[in-house]
Amino acid sequence: MTGVQRVRIFPTADALGAALAEVVANVLAKTPSSVLGLPTGRTPIPLYRHLIDLHRLGRIDFRRATTFNLDEFVGLGQGDAGSYRTFMRKHLFDAVGLSPRRAHFLNGRARDLDKECERYERAIRRAGGIDLQILGLGTNGHIGFNEPARALSARTHRVQLRTATRQANASLFDHRWTRVPREGLSMGMSTILEARRIVLIATGATKARAVERMIHGPVTTGMPASFLQLHPHADVWVDSDAAARLKGSGGIR
Ligand code: GLP
Image (cartoon, rainbow, N blue to C red; front, side):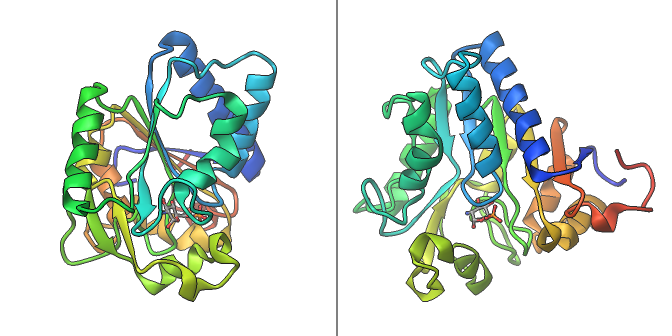
């Protein structure tokens, strides 16, 4: 193992989601005003389901929590069906009573997108930084909308989306990837790496290759998730399918 990440392998995506929901519950029990960084996508859905269950059981309280979502599509914002803001309301926020004032998003409809990115950086700083950042993983190794490239942006920025990323997001747009916006706004690599603790989650066989490269490959802008190797408190949680290429590589678990 080349990096400092701790890797945990779960039998199923659901078991991973349940375990991570317990971690989030513990973080909020210890410090109710914690700041969480959250992803969208298929992968965190079991986590969000388990958080809703814990909330129903009275085992987690989001009232003092603050959240920052990683990214958003350019052109979309509040009320737009395909926006990540709508995704989060549907899959988590409405059910756990998180106040919209405390749930922060990039506004893809802002008139000046550069200023919007600067505003987001300031808002994260004003909140005291992110305590726990949960990340998904693109099949091409992206995190947030930080796509593989010759150079990566450090701070929150506007980004051109790769076709693979637009295709992966097609389910939000009637399964028609050509309807997925061509651009996004995303926290930058430094914004992400400044989080005090990171848990990247990846499930399913389609992620196996990216998981292997992220953990065992070199740190390279061609695989943005490989930068987690540089973070002192980054964990990688995978299900057995996403871990398929790690088996036999030794020292993992
Ligand atoms: C999108 C999001 C990422 C997410 C990734 C993986 O492009 N911008 O933040 O991690 O897709 O999505 P999924 O979990 O659906 O595989």
